[in-house]
Amino acid sequence: MERKHWWRGRKKEAVLMVMHLADMHRVHPQTDYSHVCSRCGGPVGIYPSGQRILRKFQTTIICNRCQQPDQRCQPAPGAFSEVGQSRPVNRG
Image (tube, rainbow, N blue to C red; front, side):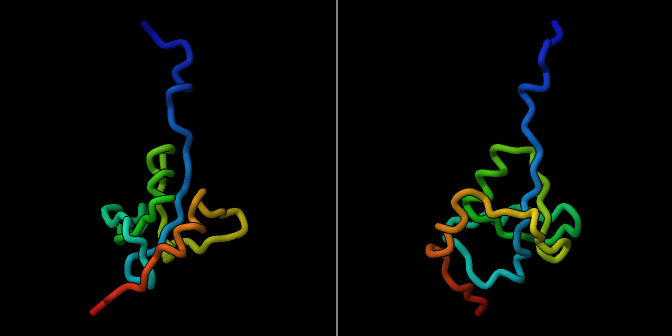
């Protein structure tokens, strides 16, 4: 039997702008390092607010090296509260 409204079950599409791992100077304790940029394939870090976007939407991940954020970009809900929870990266 064919579903009458097949589009209702589909996730909406989103683009998530993230930092290339080498460019991250601060990280959240729950940062996810298991993803890569969809354009260059470089490793990226995704904060918990971005992880929620990944669960909710069909998401394309783009790093800061492949595309600079512009006026159309907005932070993920909860991103500003994560800034205070972030710590400097120890690259030693």
